[in-house]
Image 1: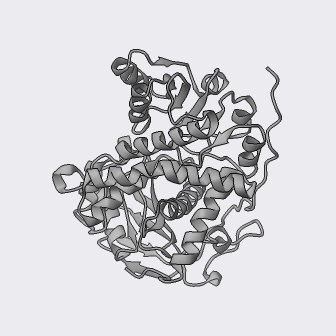
Image 2: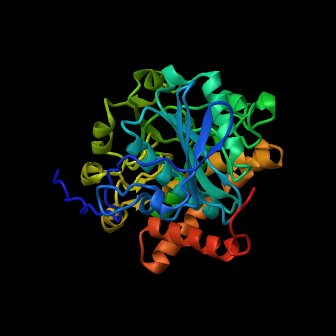
Image 3: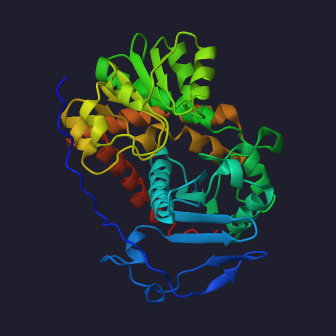
Length: 405
């Protein structure tokens, strides 16, 4: 097999190595807690590159750094936009290699939530939070409650929910300190596990991609590779098997693979993601962490369609065009994985699974519309999705402005 050269790496944002800042104004948020608020650019020491802290935050309304020393809480809440309504996005609990990596992730994720809500037709803005650390060792009731007080301090500008490393039972704990929590357990009137409709929405997006590529909205007889079979991936596998697809899986946790194969004996597995993307696939579904479509991956990818649940799949600018130029149909991640957002957002009106599922079913039509715009405008689907979301933000958002809670 000849390896096709991947697209050139490009970035609109240079890496900034930040130097320590002098103290700035802080506002009490609870016992032993402080919300650090940037009051002006002179309060921040200049980074070693040409970019300042505010250059890093371009496009975001507010970024809050949360620290509670007694519990070990170190968290970042990023509110990208409230033009369409209060920001809603999950809390990711993850052992980032550095604070810089955590900041980069939360900024990217919160921006994606803005576009996800807009493209899905929700009257919500985009936000996200990350808690830095290993949830297996750091997650405690006091830490989650401390985090909840920070969420409460934003007075409804940001609603939180589950994400990687957090679950509905965790949201019940956070909700003991904050009114602005979704994704709670069914016992507490919530939507429960949001991965259920996330997977359902991805499946609908995949059906739309199949119709566009092969003329039929089904994966029957197609070979689909699913990378990551944890929260969302395992539910996606079920939909694919029921639709008659041949499914191949991989996961960094062998126990997750074993659990899926035990339930679906016809599913096969490979050692790792590298082996999966090199396999003879019709569809590749990245369902783990972001950056799944990097230079190495797209250079060896065999699939005709990429459609998965992971956020921020494009590792850098240019990959979306490369995929389109080489006949690979990319279903934009924030369009197809919006089912989870739909599910937790439905709690704001008193949760109804049937109503939420009906709305998540529309991801099929939304994905088809993205492909239509891409064809009409002569742009990759990722660009078409952005245009669709930005149009709604501009048309509806101007009626609202900044959400004050």
